[in-house]
Image (cartoon, rainbow, N blue to C red; front, side):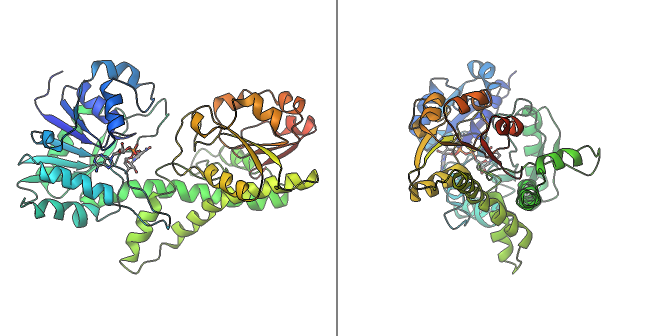
Length: 425
Ligand SMILES: NC(=O)c1ccc[n+]([C@@H]2O[C@H](COP(=O)([O-])OP(=O)(O)OC[C@H]3O[C@@H](n4cnc5c(N)ncnc54)[C@H](O)[C@@H]3O)[C@@H](O)[C@H]2O)c1
C-alpha cells in the first residue's frame, strides 16, 4: 500500500509507537520524534518497545524514520502529538508536554499541514493552549494549519482491541480540518471514525469514558468496604448482578486504580470545571474512594497480622506484583507504590517481586518470597502468580494472604488453614 503523505508522530510511547508502526504499514512515510534518546535507539533497532504481541508481525514491515533534530519534521503533512498528560503530586494537570510538543510542531510546520492531538486533554486545551502556540508563530488556524483532536483509547495488553481496530472520535476547529483528520484515520483504522461537532466535544469524550470507569470502580470499592462489614462477598454479588442482561456492567473492587488514564483523567475535568465555579463532586468522591484503597488494603494486612499476634513493625511481608495491571511492566500510578511506601515507613520488612519489572524486585523470584515471608500480599494478578499452588504458600509457612486483586481461591486458602483477606470478600 502506498500513500504520498508524510506523517510525523511526536511522542513514541504506548500510544504514539503503535500508531507510528500502523501508519507505516498502511503506506505512509513515517517520522518518529521523542525526547527520550534511548527509546529512539531501541526503535531504530526494531524493538517492540511497548511489548504488544500484535505489533511483532507489523514491526519488521514498518519503517520509522528516527528524528533526532526537530527540523527534520519540516516536510510532514500530518503531525500527531502523543505525549504524556500527567498530574502533579497535588493532582493538578500538567500540560507542559503538550505545550512543548506543540511548540516543536509549530516551529517546524509545513504550511497547510494537519496537526492532531491524541494525548488525553480536557475540553478547552486545543483552543486555549494548542491554537495560540500556532498563532504566535504567525499561522492562521483553518488556513495555514488544521488542528484536530482524536483521543486514543488503546488498552495496553488487550489481545482483542488495539490501535488498528478501536473506533475513534474526531473533532476539529473547522470543516476542512475535520475532513482531513477523518480521511487520515479512515485510511489507517479499520473501525468507525465518528466526527464530533466541535473539538471540545472530542476532548470531553475521552475524559468522560475514563471518569465513567473511575466512578464505577469507586462504587464497587465502596461496596467492598460496607459488604465486608456485613459478611457479604461483594464479588459474588457483582457476579449475581451481572446476570441481568441489560443496564448493568460489572466492575471489580481492588487495592486501587492505576495507570496513566483512570486515576489521572478525572482530575483534568475537575480542574477545568473550577474555571466555571463548578464543583465536580461526583468525580472528586470517586477519586477519594479509589485513592483510599491502598490504605484499606494495608488495614486488611494489619488485621491479619493482629490475628497472629503481630504488627507491621519487623513483619516479613511478601509483595507479589508492583505494576498496576496484569502481565505488563507498567508502574505508572500503581497503587502498590503507595502500599510499599507506607509499609516501609511502618517498619515492615518487604520482599518484593514482579517478573515484569525486575528492577523493582529485591528477591530472585516467587520461591524466595514464600521462603522469607510470614504474610503475602498479591497486588497484581500476573499469570505467574495465579499459577502458584496454594499448598506452596502453606508449605513455606505463610500464615496470611492478602488478595488485593480478588484473584485467589478464598475457600481453599481457608481450608488450608491460612488467613485470607480479599477486597470485600
Ligand atoms: N497508555 C495508555 O494506555 C493510554 C491510552 C489512551 C490514551 N493515552 C494518553 O496518550 C498520551 C500518551 O500516553 P502514553 O501512555 O503513550 O505515554 P508514554 O509516556 O508511554 O509516551 C509518551 C512519550 O512522549 C515523549 N515525550 C514527552 N514530551 C515530549 C516532547 N515534548 N517531544 C517529544 N517527545 C516527548 C516521552 O519521552 C515518551 O516517550 C497521554 O495523554 C495519555 O493519557 C494513554
